[in-house]
Image (cartoon, rainbow, N blue to C red; front, top):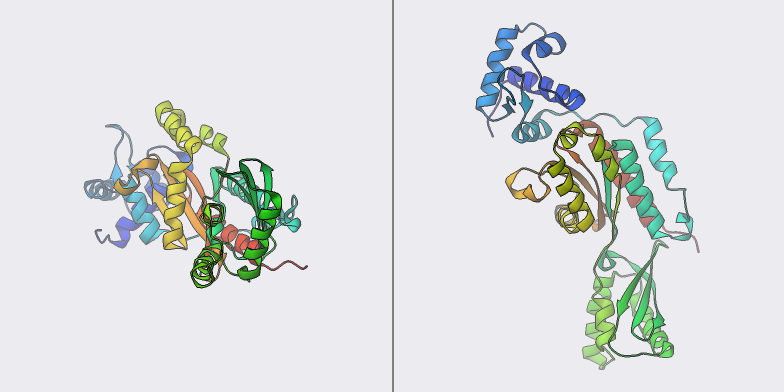
Length: 342
């Protein structure tokens, strides 16, 4: 990436902040009037032409001003942008949202739904949450409940008191007493470890003591799928760039209906941890072309449980949305990892 002069950075920043706000091409006159005191329109036009040659700006129409390219946005995010302080009232709004529903009773679904809802409401974009994978949950209690002859509900209670359930299908009819013995066996060796660690321990015990490790046990302990919660799809309908391009809007809605594309990026964020920003038309992210995705991981210490994020137009206000996602992720980490009283 090229090294830009401070003057060029100032002009690029001016164009990007105006474009974020107005969604319209920005002229040299607007830059001169609002942001670049001491620079003439002619000087600003020369800088804009230089930035266009470098690939940071483009001119949508011959007589129009310029708009930032995705390369321009990436440079802005990485090298220019200053994050805004999240207002106290917005912090309180996020914090108070976790008192809604049956969260105190360990209702994971309520926590996830509230998180996607608050992200959507504050960002006016799409809020997405990847729930903790079973693999990453520290087990306090596990139980199997037979729902019919070929179906079992797995109930997993985390150390923090959060309850998750998952339905699994089995090949053989197993009685509830057998399921109760399997539950007791796993609970005796779980002892505050993750499901991934529990799986390793069961295999070790099986080899050492020739304990039962049948198809059911294997299927239960290989559970790793996570649910995804999405809120605010309708917010996309108000964005000018999507209103004018119905084909792009259709593609975006299909991506969120399938969810697999979004899960892929949320999973990728887990691998790197912390904050990540994906700009959809960059070559490696073209599956979400036309969108940007701001994500943050949540969890406890080195144990990452899941990912939250905001998806919206590439023109989104990153300086405001990044603090929203960051604060929410930290608060969610606290909510999910704080030990509940017995």
